[in-house]
Amino acid sequence: MNKPDVGRIKDRHIEICLREDVQSKASNGFGAYQLVADLPDFSFDEIDTSCELFGKTLSMPLLISPLTGGGQESLRINKNLARVAQQLNIAMAVGSQVIMLKHPETLPSFHVRDVAPDVLLFANLGLAHLNYGLDAQGCLKAVESINAQALIFYVNPLQEVFQKAGMTNFEGLLVKLRTLCETFPCPIIVKEVGFGLSQNMLMKLKNTGITAVDVAGKGGTNWARVEQFLNQDLQIGAYEEFGTATAEALQYAMATMPQEVAVFASGGIRTGVEIAKALAMGAQCVGMGLPFLKWAHQSVDAAVEGVNQLSQELKIAMWYTGSKTTEELRGKIVSSPPA
Image (cartoon, helix red, strand yellow):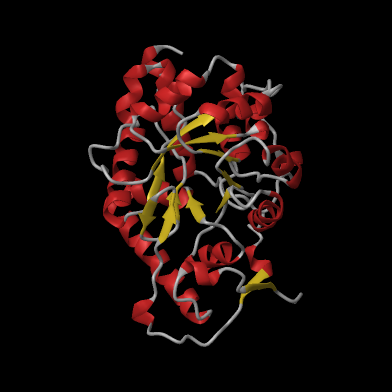
């Protein structure tokens, strides 16, 4: 990739996500579940949405999912997202830093500590890159160069196979991940990118030593659609059914992963009620991507307004279930009866 073109695809991804229909046509699965009502024994004003995550107290269990980095528009959006995270005390991840490791001149588009010195910040790399030159030193550089507290590895076999120059050698990745986890100095999280961590995938990840998984299920941004907009010759219709809905993947994760492994939920979550449902099912944190991208593209104020709406919806859901804290939400959910 020539230097003038380094960030072109990254900015093109943003443009596609903002202008085109990249939302999955499938449900995230939370409609099949219902929160259980209970009588509150406290004042609404006492509701506390805060949580502890990796030694940091957040105002609510919300993560700005990995979105972008490497382009000119990436820089503006990441700075806006970071300002929101700092102002509201929520967590944030940057987009894939592989481009940053190859092209150090793109570092400014990932560097957000100047506007967000206190946020819980996640670095982000592709797991497949461990088979394409990425080593432990590179992983540590991705974390340290942006002063992050944890590292997310995204695993995206379906997206990679749709890319023109996709990285499709996944051989031995679990062994490399396990070896890295043995000595890496900060938490490692593995996430999908919108097709969901299936039960089979979770079984393979459970003994690798990772700190958390993000199920990133079907129901949100469909990255196969994004790739189709980049490559008009690509036909994905036959694969639209692929993926595990977010609620289903979350159930699998809660049943499969060891207790010490935190479970995050993301993938098409759009309301505070859905956040409450994910927490009730056992998620420790909830991630959102596309809404934050659209808000941050508009302005910091738009993103703040969006998060405040989510917070109010979450509080009302907690009030409905008689939950003073997010921890008290756990288990207050049942499968909805069929219509």
